[in-house]
Image (tube, rainbow, N blue to C red; front, side, top):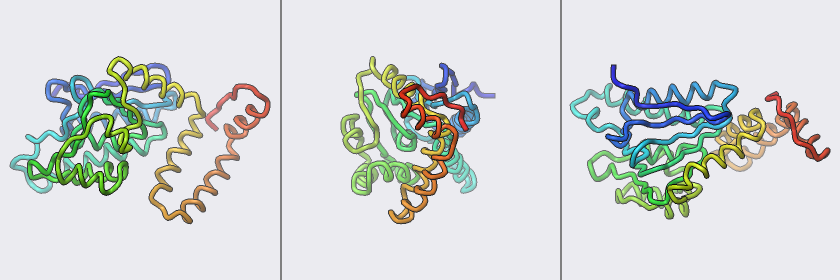
Length: 258
């Protein structure tokens, strides 16, 4: 049995999933992806967890897939790798809690996909991002799904077709990450964001996250119709009624998750 590739820690309502193979720059091997998926889903099912942080140890968040696992394999074995990757990405967006990428180092190929998939991302200002698969004959097709939805067609295609990396400031400008901060500010800034988010009703966060991903690719008319229904249903929850009453009464709301 190989040593675990992922560690999980809790700090109050914040669950932290750390990719922990720094000697290899945290490659997304089958084992790594399965462990990360299990960790994300476990935190997602924990009602005491309000926010999930995804980070890595060492100089990179992740350098992408474990290429050695892709040599001399069958089509079924190659498909298993990418299906497992899709499971991880979909788990990040399907759990009720917001997921913040804490990008402590470079995020390349599937590592860049991880950043684009997370709901929010804060990066160290020395980090670089890229989808360089074209340079080794393996186009970054699955990273393309998340990256193109984050930064748009032309910018995504520039990264995908040239294989060039971008710096953290450009990643912020393009919308791949929310903020870039000095290394000493990374963890504190992520903790600040996590605390701010965890202060909200967990039920409201779940409704909002699900609603965002439901509406984002719909035509505007359909999006408005579905979100009007979602907001009306949300307004009837106990937490929404409590939150509105608390605002009008100028007091702190008491969330019940109902």
